[in-house]
Image 1: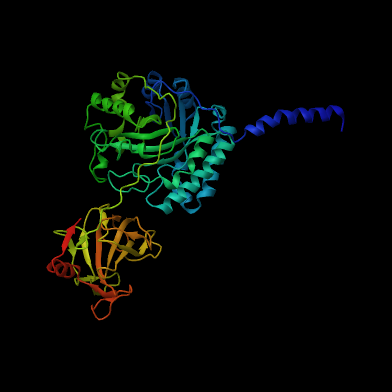
Image 2: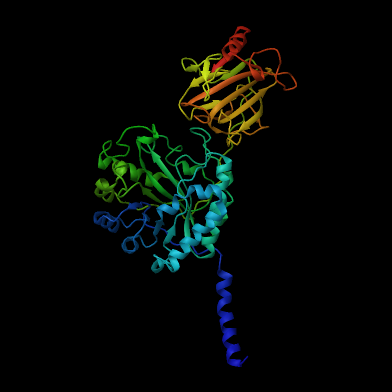
Length: 498
């Protein structure tokens, strides 16, 4: 090898060392924008692009972006703002994520790398204001679902970090993560290991928040629920705004603010939320500017744009940002259980099927019902009768049981098991100890069910935890819950419907 060639190799090696040492290390954070108001953009209406140019937003999310629109947005952003790109088909590949989360996360990251290096968006590939999205609104109703989302997100973020691309992490919907009951904080433990990964790549955590009828109603439950997240990371609220769907999913149109609020009133709500939402929020994106279908027209922000612009004000950023947060205080230990009390699902006036009623199965054969069917809206909390242990739970429907998601709690001091079927969510596992009044899960419509209700049974048990024999014509010592409760009450004890 000639000295000239050797010299070239040595110079190349010297130039590569700093690059390789920097690769994968945290990127220097950008500055902070003047305010936190952002835009969720669908389409390319000229009036919307002019609105962005006047607003100078902190962030704009563009759904299925066109390069010409990206150029306009980048030119109009606050100097420290970000432009978020969402590939709609990619972001809806939830079944792929559920089947193979790690491989799907890697594939999605490499897909964005290709788009930003040699594909459709290569002209923007070196712009650190560009941020990309992965899966949108994944299910996180229980720990198993959370784990799949965590595995996907870890692979997605780490691959993007290695390629110097920034992203929104999680993109969680309003019901996140693992709802623990209204006015109780969400449970973030599964996702906490993402905190250093988000910091390393200068990524953002992303959630969606909505409210009805105004932000302060349900503050901390829907609007500003992100305040319960202990991560010290930048946050983008990827969707937010007024929606009547928080009342009931089947509520008729209009769902959004148009037809329900005046434009000045809605602009006031958006700026109130902008001012008050958690300090680690970098930007909020009212849903939506432009709309893909007429069902979303009532949420189109365009008629309120003049009022939003008329209320623009600066945001006072903390001296040190993001703000360090601590884990939420644990819920207080339950009070001492009352041995004379049993808590049962609220059944008065709600029983749609009695013990012993004749039902017809899928094969057309009649059989006697073995519990109570209690009509209740899906998502109604279900509580433990008293202290005990979870004898069995199937939160993932792995058994494919006719009862769907269910659990059975054993209460040795009473000599019974309580059985709760057709749940939408089960928050306990086999072997868990439970306290009187503890949340077991939420009612639902899973398994062989023709409508939202709870199937409730009482089964008689021996002191050793076996089913008693000779006490019922039904299997597993099932007895009439109403008759058992009547006997319990007649003996001087208490029954609370909850």
